[in-house]
Image (tube, rainbow, N blue to C red; front, side, top):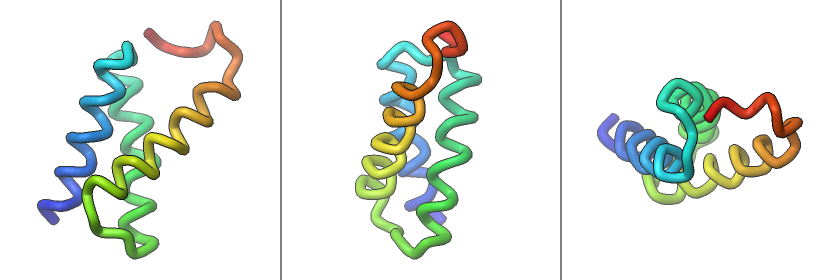
Length: 69
């Protein structure tokens, strides 16, 4: 369970430094990180990196005015 929280902390910290609001960062990480754990990946840094890659892709595909900053 500690690995899950480490991955969440890594990914959330990155998004906050990137400029996302805490609400948006938590929502994005909450959608992606648990799913990766359920798929069997339990290394925190790998989970965070994969989740962030998916999140970055999602943010790039969104219209600019819908990003909460």
